[in-house]
Image 1: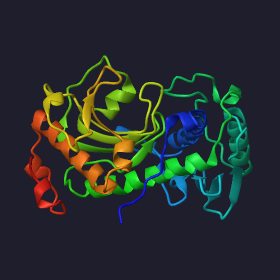
Image 2 (image 1 turned 180 degrees about the horizontal axis):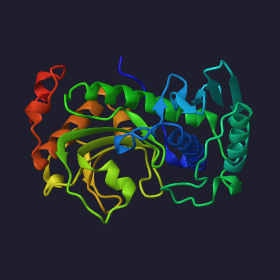
Image 3 (image 1 turned 30 degrees about the vertical axis):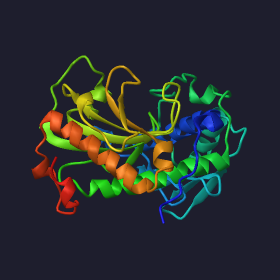
Length: 309
């Protein structure tokens, strides 16, 4: 039977989403400070797990540790390679400042003292983490729904990744933008530019077609699947997309996105097939306009119909 996806209207949990986003940024910055740098910043994202989100193993000094968001039991769990476990309850009323203090206090008790820049990155919120008492909302039921949507997306993205034989990213959650992402590479370097910031310069050093899912924000007012091609080729928005509800949009003005509303996937006869169809059509559109060698980049695991455009 087709999987039943939960409703996820942004207006039901926007305050809770903003608080969770900032909590995730704090944990993400700990991951950045506790892992070796990797190309395209692949050392900094978090990953979906069977209970929520996880950092996977990190290291400070002589201690290996990981931090998990457990959305089933509504708690943050710290584990070390020495067998230690500590838990922080995720509850409505726990502010970003309180989360920051409690987490770093518990880490210090375990002999773990990462140094981070304690302020938000890439979001409208600007209050430093230790001072943010404003964001203190948590809705366990809606957060679980969001996590269920992430699990579904991760599984479909991973299947789609198997259709590609070139370099591509893991399916991971970038904490600055709070989206689950899979990125494919053509193998060619992108034109260099000194006008972009160093973070973006590393992220987009090579030609990419990226696919993602976000829960919505102040500009995009509903959960959405998306894809973009960078550098953006001419005529991208003239390419066809599937299914019929998919469309081209430029919500942030700077780039053209293929978009498909989460609700259009959720209410499809088969959400799995609807999302795969969207991903493949967005890839074909970008690859065709950017002149990727799709035949050479197709995997033997891909369905025959997807191996060329």
